[in-house]
Length: 331
Figure (cartoon, rainbow, N blue to C red):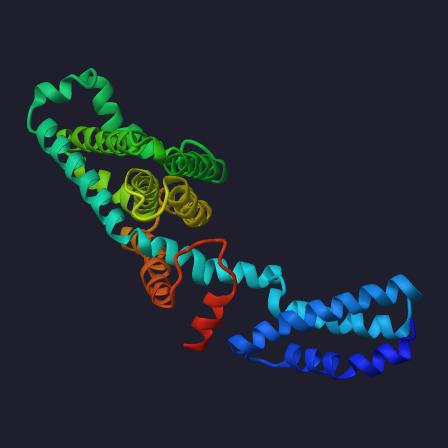
């Protein structure tokens, strides 16, 4: 093969390929032309290498093809960009999708817990069924508070973090079963209501709410979100809409997987608060203020960044690439 003759004959086509590869915006016809010229140049490169092996002409053509290939396939995101996209786009969008379902789960939990607390605290016979008076008094007057300080703060924080993260992960992973999430919600509400009723019965209602509030604001919200994610996955299977059930489950599970990842971090924060802030000898307004600030940060991600990402067309799908970041940066 005469390489000089080939280069002369194909020079205009290769130059056009290079121009298209460097163009920032391509219309439909130009994009089609880019692919066609890429395929033709790839065939030329194959002939050059088959006939002459490694040559300067082949190397230059290979560089041009690589530039064109990046133009229509894109480049992989850097790890830092992927990390930023997760916290600014994927997670907020996924959380925003769950806002109303999360509110419904929270309302159901507090309604059940409140009813149990009102019913049990108003009838001494019901409270007596929970244990002997000495045991219940010890729980109300000593055990409830001692629970938060009987172990070293670091190990206690790690223990509650892993336990809560495991519960949240189960809600997301087993949500498709349909019964697991209601069971977790009911169990959580009953435990909250029974403990509150015992504390109220022994005139320790203020202790109950003061010790629950600092870490519970964020911790309970995370559990509600995890339950909402599990219910959303179950509903994708029950009512997939125009999608097949497999498609609906795959899309929603992939999007809501980001919720499970994000909740691990937020539950870590609530665990730190429970281990180090709740039992600390600080004024209660300070401790509750720390818990409220942590919840405020979570709600900013969920409702503030989430609304912005949702309006930009994001769904929280981890399979989406940097279009969301570009839209958010643009405006």
